[in-house]
Figure 1 (cartoon, rainbow, N blue to C red):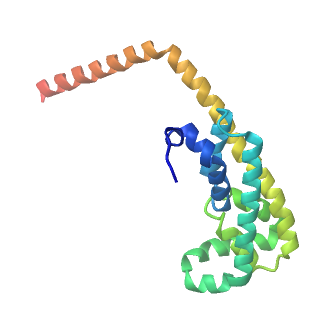
Figure 2 (figure 1 turned 45 degrees about the horizontal axis):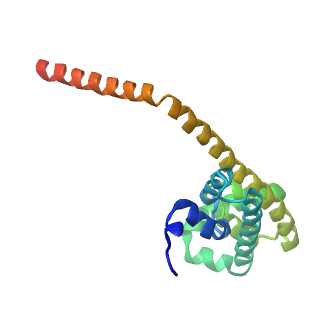
Figure 3 (figure 1 turned 90 degrees about the horizontal axis):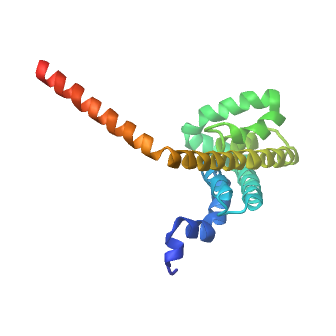
Length: 192
C-alpha cells in the first residue's frame, strides 16, 4: 500500500477508506463512526445516501451474525464469560414482554448492541421474526444516527462561521480573563 499526500489528509482518508470504515464500524457498535460519517457527508466528503445504505447493511448484517451466534453458541458463551450475564438477563426480561420493540430498539441501547442480539438469539424468537424487526431497526438507526452527525456538522459549520466573526472579541475576552486571573493571583500571594 502506497501512502500519498492525498491519503494522508483527512479528506483523502475519508475518500479512500470512509465507506469501508462505515461498513466495518456498523458491523459492531458503529454509533461514533456513523456520527462522524454524517459530519463528513454534511461537509461533502462522503455521500449521505451511501453512508445510510452502508450503515443499514452493516448494522443488519452485524446483528444477524450476533443473533445466530447467540442461537448456536450463546449458552456456551454465557458459561465461559460471566461479563455478559447481566446484559443477557436484562434483555431476556424485556424480551418476554416486548420482543418486537426490543429487537428494533436494542441497537439504540448503550451497552447492549452486541449482547442484545446474542441474547435474543438464545431465546425462542423465530429467526424470521428477528430478521423483519432487525431490518426495521437498522433502517431507523442508520437514518437517525447519520442524521445526527449530518445535523451536528451543519451546526458545527455555523459555529465556526460565527466564531470567525467574533474572533477579535473572543481574543480580547480571553486576554482580559487571563490578566484578571493573574491580578487576583498576585493579590492573594501578597496577602498570604
